[in-house]
Image (cartoon, rainbow, N blue to C red; front, side, top):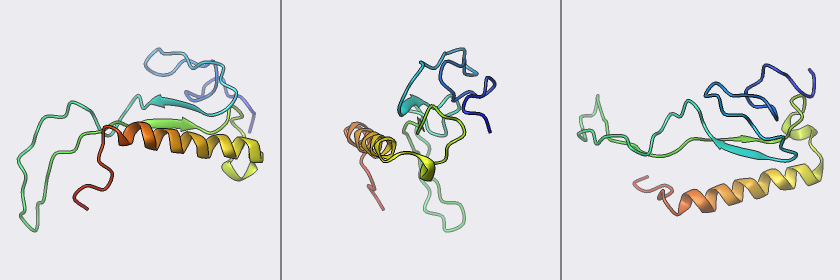
Length: 107
């Protein structure tokens, strides 16, 4: 697998499906998912405690974290320095999103 794939929406410098262009990142890169499973403005749905058809509203955001600009590397193939960058990014995202979203509420 090549280090950079010109057709990959995640690679540095490539244009994503939305038309946004990724920066030429050198470490981890975070962006809001172009096809997010959760939205911040989801309308309220009626709650149901029916044992067969439970439902409740869910709001949130979906972020994509690119671990490395090298398309060919998997997580265990990254350097210790790059892995530290990934873990730091997880911590930063958890702290940032934790200001808005109550982790584990209702669980």
